[in-house]
Length: 142
Image (cartoon, rainbow, N blue to C red):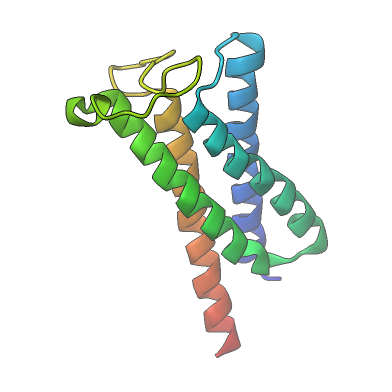
């Protein structure tokens, strides 16, 4: 494994670690109960941390395809979730989410940074890095 791929895998691990710890901080320390869409995002983020931990130990950069899939799906959910928080026409058609409404905003830093925004940013960083790794792997095969 070349140094660029190793560093890319480490970057994905670090982003997923920060996202996982951040989500646990908001729910377990601050007491913010996650809505249904937040749970779906967690379901896709937490395995990325576990998968990249094992992949880094094994020096397996081919895991980039898996992290790309997880992050693209998670990013789409985050984008939708952020949209129903910030766009009026989506807010009105938001699904009924259990006890905690998906339109609720526990944080709203600078008027646009919400929890789904932070999750979406993490998923985007992981997706970009994963696609970079896939392209580097393709180049090495040729």
